[in-house]
Figure 1 (spheres, helix red, strand yellow):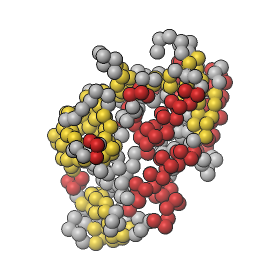
Figure 2: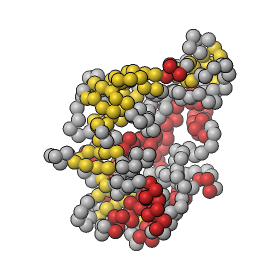
Figure 3: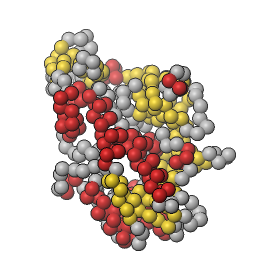
Length: 361
């Protein structure tokens, strides 16, 4: 962005979005801060602070906006968030999957709602504190890139952003490193500059067993106990629900086998958890559904594939399966990839450019 524009900035109350807003103000833009109220939390102690979009963070967002001299608005999107993110999260765990709720939130709630609000508030652009970058092809087509800070890159969560939204998005932190952003917040005396990092899902909270307790609290009647079996099918014990397990899990199995054992498969039909050796976690082929490709990208293609957020990526060849309006694809990895889990998202890259992705199935 070069000329002065009205820019809607998503403000969660955290350091990143605050610095993003401050930089845009410095650039002379007409900045409007917006916070989406997505969830209510039962806890009120200090441990509940610093998480994305927590209600208590709305106060920090407002304080930051006041300090920057920009207007600030909060909009209630709790019903949409529950329907689009929380309910599918619970359903996925009960189906033996490992969901990616932050991807669902950015795709189905945050970006689309911010665009709608920008239209209502007369903003030409929408800016967020994501660590991601945007570039254009020689013929002007926008595309998403990884952020400069590899440890904080969030392009993974934004892979499904449509072209119409990419045309209007801005990521003021894309070329920055987190320590630089933190130092800038302190130097600017931004409210909450010393606030800690969010380490857990914004709606689940911290603590051992938090995910399982969350699922049980919303779907107790649907939780079924079942057997835990070894690679030969021998019953080793029982469990209280498959939502307590994920592919690749080693700790908290409740079973002593005398040798390292990992969750290698989860069968939702029989509520069976399968254990095996580390080798049983390796896959050379994976399938994705709900396929989304970046503008101008088509299959087949060779790419670096990240099968979960913190995955460093693996070389693979992606081919379309046809049918279902072309929304499925097969990934063939050059080398075996560990712990490919149903429900997670596989995102395709060429260098730092996002080519698309889909949900592992």
